Figure 1: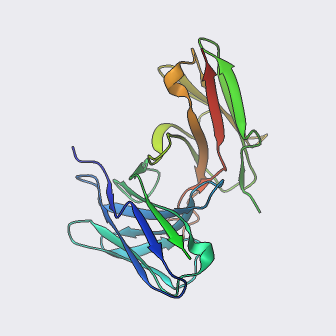
Figure 2 (figure 1 turned 90 degrees about the vertical axis):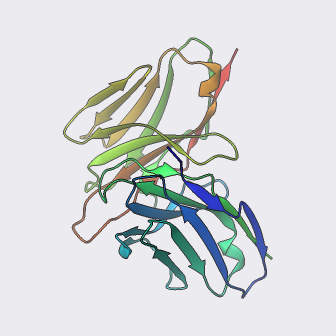
Length: 113
Length: 115
């Protein structure tokens, strides 16, 4: 059973640029969620995709967008990067939309300078 | 406004003794609670969960207790082992009916098991 994999592991971008982070779900999982974890904080929910559609969103602006593909892999796109976007971005997959334990990847560490 | 609070940033426990990690929540819509464990440079790993219809759930050395009236839950680890040293996150979710709400996490408690 293949777990959740994320790429790249580390990334440095400049303020104002755009970034795309990628995630492969655990085999058999049809739901993917993205979380942002700032230093010293718990993960914060960005959004969730189920069957290629966004079906839940946290308190993040529209410049955070995503995609889920037919093979359940996913992308997180962030436009017009700000310094406060520097964080660990975690992808998680699950079977079903509600009350299913999330299986997290190891994250992508994004630094915005 | 933090809806899930873990008031102890760190906790040190001797190997073999009981570790008790605490979590408080404010949102009465939460109906499912989870604990995750995180090692450095790894993503969080699911540990144990509890539904609001229960007050206790046990899995091996791990037991979670839920006190709905106090809006409080705790994770007990008995006996504590060196491999339990990690950051533990409490998380909660409730179905508001408007789509997936995602998990709300606390800030975590760093558990250190002393030999």
